[in-house]
Length: 135
Image (spheres, rainbow, N blue to C red):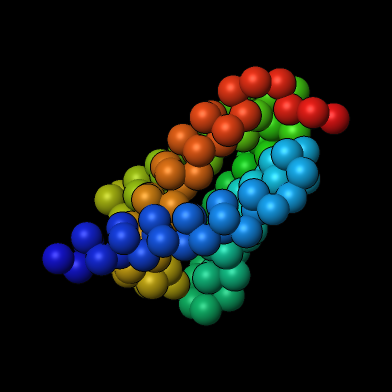
């Protein structure tokens, strides 16, 4: 039941973001999702400040760099890259922060909330931007 509630919370948060973002022009909407991907990675860097080693800081900063580059590539080349990056962020959430090791600095509930948020947003981006995004 706890995991179901975490997944529901992520889905509701994603739906709220999409509803707000749909008020923007398509190009700006896509830009918001790119910024959101960077913020999603940056949150883990913020968690490191709670109680983590330099090693974890390096891992989280590397993730931030990868997802920031993917966000930029998604804007420059194709929304599909951005959608794939959001889907890949699920692996970051679950594999690194839930299955391989559960670091003390990440709240236990956070990775599962991100799973539904990330996957729903990735799917939405694919559907919404399957045609060329206006410049």
